[in-house]
Length: 352
Image (cartoon, rainbow, N blue to C red; front, side, top):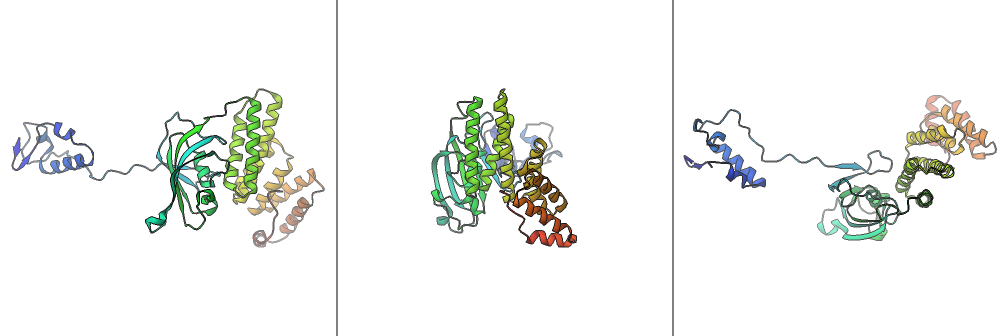
């Protein structure tokens, strides 16, 4: 059917045949020139009068929401990945120590020339997940992934993105890693007996301790917290194994407090140590580390109380005696002077 110089299709078949952006543009242009009812073969339509209920569609489609996932070990949103291709719902997740095969591409985000933008890859790599073979940024990313997932993560912190094995040094403002997880072997430890899980957990704890000593704080924190959650979920049904799991969980939480102290997250340190003290009120390390965190937050009375309790557990400790004396002197100062003294003083080492 013709109307002037514009041909209006007698059915919507023609429009259904055109898909995608070109189809939307075609429909928008046709609606502008011919009324909607005319294209539907409505015999009662008044030629040239557009229907009052016609909606003008936008040619530019609304952008999809970007899927961002927190991958920071401290779960404070400081480090996130963007999921490009999500994994299937029932896809297996990466566990620490699993052998993973992933395609890695690294690029400098702020590079002005295309030649210097690409730093590595795309290239496949095989390694044991979360064991320190790759930089902390890649290890944190891979530890949060499922089989078949594709994502990108970036950081301007050289401690996170430097990977000597990949030839990436710390001379860049920000480095972005693109990771495609292609295989996990095996999906989960083959031997899930309580004794085998305890052996695996103890091995992972030793690896995390070495990472902390090598200043891989973020990855060590991730591993300590993962081990704590795993031990809480495991029910061995055996009293001896249960006791070992509780001791392992307590040690991992105390080590996680050290990591959080390195990251200056003092409130989290207090929370974790308080959690340990709820189970073991006389735990000397928990009392000491909570006292350290309280000092850093300016809570001298609470710090003095924790140090005093720790000194009752170990009266011969020179370090705790020093902290008690420091708190006593600090409490004699005006509040404003306490804040200045707290910023300038050496309040001890969290690793004690």
